[in-house]
Length: 263
Image: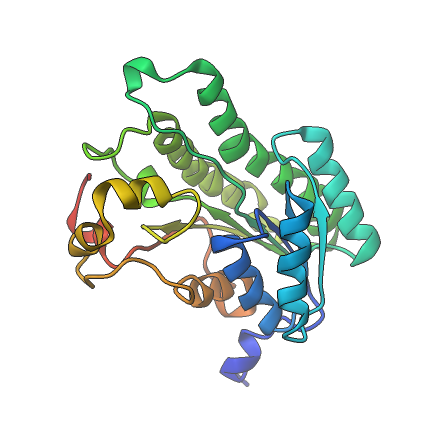
């Protein structure tokens, strides 16, 4: 007997940890997981923003908690995972969304900024995945990890100068493939989302510099991302509906990456 399709997307009773979950894409994905029945733990640096985000989810009937932490700090990452286990139980779904960017020509890019971007966009993804796998997923032989990359990791750009960010997102994509290869035998699915342009604090400068209409014009769908456009993708990769998908990168970009090898 096959499973009813809506049951495949049902996350009732599962625990999801969402990094960078206080706003933007992280909060959008947390909302989707919570609406599908998951208990959600949000983490980011700023307690006030987390409290507001959790209240927004709770108002929808979602079991949402939060813990403030700096995801560039390995000790803080372990604390987040430990606290999630204590307060909600073993982690079924990890959304590795925390990230940073820095704009500068490659020849002038500061080393300190390079390290900041790499630590948050690559090292923290690995450390969260490692900590959650050790504590929850490998012992139970089940789990879903979704790393948030970017179409910036798929090709170079002549329009935007962000060498560390682009490099970090390419690294996140191959980190995804390697973890999928190693942990697949333990029934752990590891995939990546590669969003295109969505309005967010991180993309505000680029949107202002290039213009929303100009960016939308580069996409076959003639639009940039909106408030609902990651929900279906993250739910697919976090649920039984995507159980035969691993090591893959799904671009959610209005078709930009299908027609442009670079920006």
